[in-house]
Amino acid sequence: MPYRTPEPTLVTPEVLRNWRLPEPGGGKNARGSVLVIGGSTETLGAVLLAAEAAMRAGAGKLQVATVASLAPVAAAALPEALVRALPESGSGAVSAGAADAVRDLAEAADAVLIGPGMADEEETQAFGERLLPHLRGPLALDALGLACVTADPGCLHHLVGRVVLTPNPTELAYALHVSDDAIEEDPAGAAHDLARRAQAVVGLGGATSWIAAPDDRVWRDESGNAGLGVSGSGDVRAGITGGLLARGADPAQAAVWAAWLHGRAGERLASSVGRLGFLARELPAEIPRALAEVVP
Ligand SMILES: NC(=O)C1=CN([C@@H]2O[C@H](COP(=O)(O)OP(=O)(O)OC[C@H]3O[C@@H](n4cnc5c(N)ncnc54)[C@H](O)[C@@H]3O)[C@@H](O)[C@H]2O)[C@@H](O)CC1
Ligand SMILES: Nc1ncnc2c1ncn2[C@@H]1O[C@H](COP(=O)(O)OP(=O)(O)O)[C@@H](O)[C@H]1O
Image (cartoon, rainbow, N blue to C red; front, side, top):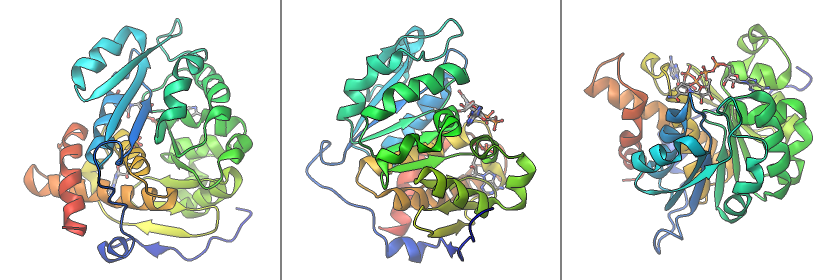
């Protein structure tokens, strides 16, 4: 890696207690609106999981934008959400042209999360290239939402200090154009490398999570357990990040808190349900309880 990786700070409840999340009062508008853009005809669940997690992390208002053919299903599954139906490609993905159909919502939202369940790399990259220049942040990019960063890490340079990237190791390998083995050898260095290149906070999930900021701060989070390595778990984590951004957390704070809250939610389910076999859809309800453990 081209940069020396600084010593990481271990994330503990004490660290979080001294880095309190904003507690805006005054109703749902003060707590922020989060827009979650994602899904495809094969992976609607990802956007539903992320959206619920965003609300459970304390966002005040929820908007979801997904493929038109499944928008009514999303609306039925998420009674709290305003749902925008987006043009879809022949393959059932959010189309590049959908950027124009969601731009008004994205410009008005307090935070935007793009990526959970998105499909078709070419369409998604073009979608990002069309939408991102209009955004002022805060913004979180997950899964294939990272495709425009893979193509050009400079695509976020108008949003410095306002973006969190939430790759899993495979997505980070894509974004850095390196092998999965290279990420495994030095996950902290890889997260730091992308943070510097994209000028964005990177929250890399895994048994150990690493959070790296472009200003060279690095955190290590050891919360969680093997039960969290399950379908949809990363989508929940991305949703928590988006929800915390909406309620006013800065990008590094949102990524650090999201890593710990997600891990702690898994620990709580391990105690109540069992070490393995809990579901990603069970994680969101544990988020307010995990939050209350840190700040009663
Ligand atoms: N219920 C659902 O709808 C579920 C949907 N999921 C979605 O399924 C997708 C794949 O997740 P997996 O955990 O299988 O992913 P893997 O880690 O197995 O696969 C590779 C990942 O790299 C991404 N990728 C491909 N090209 C890329 C590029 N140019 N730049 C950056 N990233 C790139 C893929 O979209 C995928 O997310 C994600 O969109 C995720 O949100 C999963 O989380 C499982 C549950
Ligand atoms: N053994 C573990 N210990 C702690 N956390 C874990 C463990 N395995 C997975 N996780 C957490 O669960 C998240 C989802 O894992 P995984 O399903 O492999 O990723 P994704 O859904 O992003 O593809 C990871 O990003 C990490 O935060």
